[in-house]
Structure formats: structure tokens, C-alpha cells
Image (cartoon, rainbow, N blue to C red; front, side):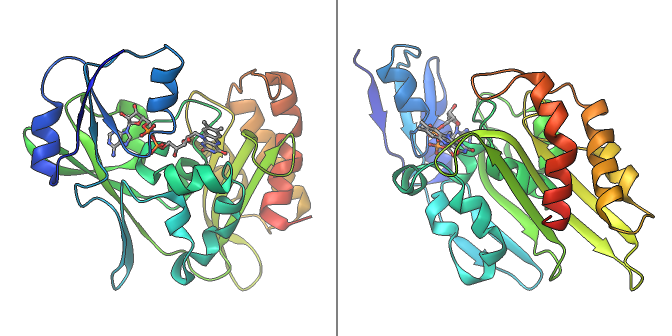
Length: 268
Ligand SMILES: Cc1cc2nc3c(=O)[nH]c(=O)nc-3n(C[C@H](O)[C@H](O)[C@H](O)COP(=O)(O)OP(=O)(O)OC[C@H]3O[C@@H](n4cnc5c(N)ncnc54)[C@H](O)[C@@H]3O)c2cc1C
């Protein structure tokens, strides 16, 4: 099938190129091009984000800004070392060189590993569209999405304090596998080991990555030990529907969530 390919060199040019029916933004193309090749998508035109100045990582005084078209592989850098586990578990090296951070937000379940991590980091998005630029919390993006004529331009989050970051991706095989469950958390404890604050995000439990208020509430105010971590997992399993796919049944996901929550939070 023939379609036009646009490679605009600025965000306004991207927005202009996306105006009209059948236009699709493409970043790394790992999903867009696959769907075209496999006959599931028939765009009139694809609009590449790769030359629009949307790639790169900038460290500010208190935050990190990452361009939406930044390939996952480019996140392997010292200031983002805490994300090494996320990167290592993400698809294959070839995919990581192509797949973008912004594109991952649109990936269907059970994909969306970096979305899980970014939710726990309380990230916000830069959005651009015909009516200008705006920011929105990632949480809101997953609840409401963006308009068809808008794009994500970048992501911003504060670096987690040392020792607060947790990550676990449970898979059917060690590497290059989509998740059965993904768990990301930022957990702050006081000097007695009691959880003072927690942001816990999950993949594999709903249509897209979610925060788990149930797990967070179960953990806060308790000493962070195996019983508290498992209890947080049990509360999450009760609160989120989970789903069945080729990797696991919904029942299995709910059953193993407490175990993986304990492993994610305590490493045991
Ligand atoms: C074999 C294989 C293994 C995979 N493994 C994993 C995995 O382990 N973990 C995981 O999370 N994912 C995985 N994926 C899914 C996918 O590759 C990634 O989620 C990837 O990050 C998608 O990014 P992309 O740049 O390739 O998206 P694209 O294919 O370019 O785009 C995907 C969708 O997002 C939209 N889009 C892209 N960028 C933007 C933007 N900036 N603003 C607005 N819309 C945008 C596009 O229009 C399209 O609808 C895998 C895919 C394959 C094929």
C-alpha cells in the first residue's frame, strides 16, 4: 500500500503535517510500521518525529527532561542509572535502539514498561498541538489521553532520592519478553524504617499502566518488611482487575502480584 512519508524538522511542522485524515505520527516505528506491514493499519501518510528536535536528555537543577522521540537505548547514562533494570528488561537491543520513550506511552498492554516507571516517578508530559503547547501529568494522560492532532513532545520528572527507587518486571523468560507484571515504586522511609510516602505503579493489571492507591495506602505508616510488602500486593491484587493474554491468565497475575510486590520492594 502506498503512503506519503513526511519528515518535518520542527514541532510546528509536525503539527501541520498531521492535519488531515489518515495521518499517523511515527517515532521509532516499532509498532506503527509493524501494523502497516501486517495489514492492520492503512494510513494516507506517516509523519516522522525523528528530525523534529524531540530527542535528547537534559538534566536541570532538580528535574530531568527527555524528548519524546528519544530512543530507549539513549537512556543508558549515569544520571539515569537507576533505570538500568527498566532498560535491560525492555525488548531486545535492536528494539531499544528504535523504540522511543514517547511511543511507549501509546503501546498496547502488556507493553508500556517505561510508562510504569514514569508513573512511579510522577512524570509530566509536554504536549503540542494546533492550539499551542501545554503540560499534563502522566496520570491524566492515561486517564484522558490527548487529542488526535496533538503529540507528546517530552517527559519531565524529578530524580528519586537515593535508595528510594524500586523496579521489577516479571516475565515468562529472562530477557526480551513482554511483562506478566511490571512494578515500579518510589518509597520513602523514616529513620525507624516506617514508610512515610510511596508511589507505586503497575503494569499487567489494567488496560494501561496505573498507579495503585490501594498498594500505597497499605504500605504507608508500616515498617517496610516482608509482611507489609506482601500485604500491599494483596491489596493491589484485590483492587485491580488484571487481564489475560498469551503471557498469563488474569488469575495468575492476581495470584503472583503479592510475591512480586515483595520482591520489588525488598528484593527478597
Ligand atoms: C518484538 C517487540 C518487543 C517489544 N517489547 C517491549 C517491551 O519489552 N516493553 C515495552 O514496553 N514495549 C515493548 N514493545 C512495544 C514497543 O516497541 C515499544 O512500546 C516502543 O517504545 C514504542 O515506541 P515507538 O517509538 O517504536 O512507537 P511508534 O511505533 O513510532 O508509535 C507507536 C504509537 O505511538 C504514537 N506515537 C509515537 N510517538 C508519539 C508522540 N511523541 N506523540 C504522540 N503519539 C506518538 C504513534 O502514532 C503510534 O500510534 C515491543 C514491540 C515489539 C515489536
